[in-house]
Length: 564
Image (cartoon, rainbow, N blue to C red; front, top):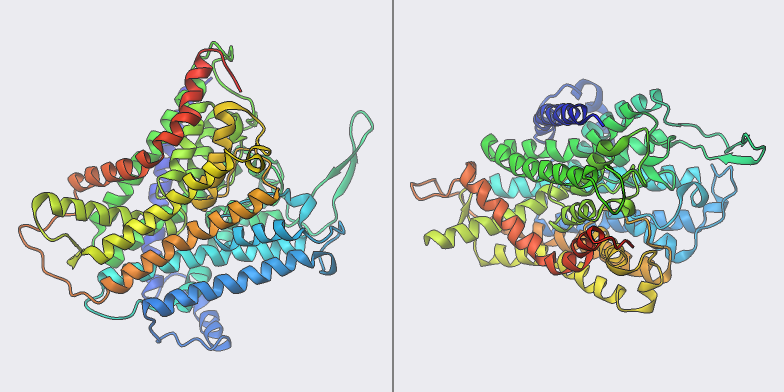
C-alpha cells in the first residue's frame, strides 16, 4: 500500500480546496452585494426577468420575521410539490419503467428529507422513483434547499455588519442570486466533467444485458449526472441510484471521485470567505476556516489510521470490506469524513463496514452540529452559534460585556443560541433511546450489540443533523423510522433556522460599538483555541455517553476478538 501517494493526494486535495474556496467566496461576495462580476453580462438580464415574472421587488427589505415566513413558505410549497409528485408518479411523464406510485409514508419521509436538505433515502432510486420525480422533484429541491440555507447565512451576516437597522435583506433576491450565479454555473460545469468520466445522463429506458453465465441483467440508466453534480455541490447527497456514489454510473473513475469529494466541501468552505468579506474582516474568516480545517484533517488522519492499522481479529493490514477496489481505503475514508463533516450524506463506501473508530469519526462529525464544514450556509450559521457561546464565555471570564463585531451579546442571543444547539442534540438522544428500547426500533437493525446501537444512533444523528447518510445495516423503510426520522429532520432543520434568524433580528437593531483596548479579538489563534474548546466541550461531550456504548466499546470488543 502506497501511503506516500495517499499523503500527496491529501495535500493536493487540501491545497485545491483552499485555493478554490478563497476565490469562489470572494466572487460570491460581489454577487451578494449586487456588484458587477464575471457572470453579470450573461446573467443580469435573466435575473431581472425572474424578478419581473414573480413580481419581486429587489429593493424591498424584510424584517427577520418576514424573512423567516418566506423560508417557511418556500419549504412548505416545495414539500407539497415533491409529496404529490411521488403519490401520483405513475400518471406523470418520463416514467419508462412504469414505476408505481410511492407509498404514502415513504413519500412523506422523502419529501421532508429533500426539502430540509437532508436527502435521507429509505428507498432505492432506480426501483422507486421515475425520471420525472428525480429531476423535477428531487433535483429541483437540491437547488432550492441549498439556496435557502445560504440565504439565511446572508441574512445573519447583514445583521452583524449593519449599523442599527431593522431589516435583513430580501429572501427571494438572495435565493435567486444564489441559484443563478453560484449553484447553477458550478453544477453545469461539474455535470459536463462527470459525463466525460462515464457518469450516465440519458432518458433511455433501462438496458437489458446477458451475463457470462447467460442470465438476464437489467442495467439502470437515467439523467444522473445533472442530479449528482448539484447533490454534491449543494451538500444534498441523495443518490440517483440505491448504492449512491459507490455505483459506477454515479462515480465511475478515481478522477470523478476526486472531483465529487472536492465539490462536497467547496461551497461550505467558500462561504466562510464570503462571510468574512461581509463582516469586513478577512482574518476572522481565516480563523474560522482554520478551525474547521483542523478538525477535518484530524478526522481524516484518525479514521485512516484506524482502517490501515493491523488487526489480529481481521487478519489484515487494511479493511476493504464494503469498499470499492477502484477507490481503495484512502479515497473511501476521505469521502466518509468529508460527507459527514459537510452535511452531504452521499457515500462511496458502506459506512456499516468501517472500523469502529472510523464509524466514531463519522458520528462525531454529525453530532458536533454539522459545522465542520457543514451544509451550504447551515454549517456556518451553526458555527455562529458556537462562536456566540465562545464570545459570551470569554466575556464572563474577563468580567466584560461580550461583544461580537461591536454588537453586544446579551441574554436574548445566548438563550436562542442554546436552543439552537440543544434541539438537534435532544432529538438525537431522545429518539435513539426510543429506537433502542422498542420492538419497532430494534426490528430494523442488522447487527446486534454496540454495532446495532450505532446503527440506530447514526440514523437519528443523520436525520437531526440533516446529513442523510446511514449505516447501511438499518432497514429504514418502516413506519417507525419513516415517521421518527421525518420528525427529526424537521426539528433539526427549523429548530436551528428559527433561533438563528431570531438572533439576527435582534442583532441588526443594535449599534456597533467601537473597539477598545479591552475588546476581545476574534481573529487570532487564542480565539481559535477557545472556539475549538467550546465545540468539543459543548458538542462532543453531549454525546460521549452514547458514543461510549456504541463505537467506543465496540472498538475494545473487536480488539478482544468479538465482532458483530
